[in-house]
Length: 257
Image (cartoon, rainbow, N blue to C red):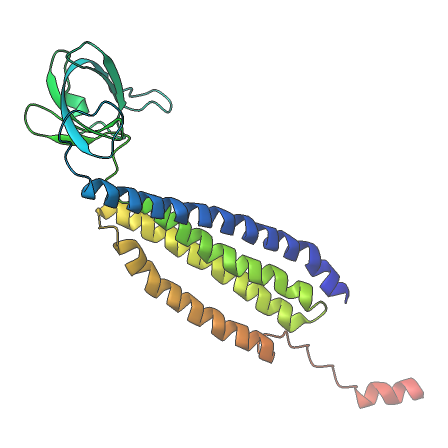
């Protein structure tokens, strides 16, 4: 029972970490769903019959003149940006997630065409026909959010189970070892999710590569976790006590004499 009491604080920490990680994972999953819904809405949006007076769900193109553009390299949290002027002289400030291929080539006085949707410039096209999404661009797969959600779920669920398990089986060493197995397999599966996300980003693989690669790795992790949990519950992972030394008959006889 003393061993069970020592397990308590550590189990509670794992339980809380699991709950917090699952909350973050759910938030990331909702962001992924929202991004995909926004992209579908954008692709289905019709072209405006006329220039809308208010922000509208239809798409329309507007010619702008570049007043200034800055890459903001070296500035902390500085995104590439440009100030575009309407024919009326009204300025529009636009930011970009990256510098290429358009914003890095923009020069003051240059004419560009902005694609406007819901009152925001979501894409800019230069005179050479190159296009670049702005920070409000709706097209793009949120691979980082998907990978983060997978990592959070892969860690959060085992941490939650592995943290709660010893609290309901205090004093049982086999159950405590099974809980440890569950926790650390969750850590390994979360690392596998992050590695998959890194590989996808480094190689430019499509969005579906993240679940396609991580899925088999997660199944292997679950199979390994199940095997080790069964072994722990059976006692195959118990520490065997060293055999007691046999008494020496000669030493015993001399002691009696």
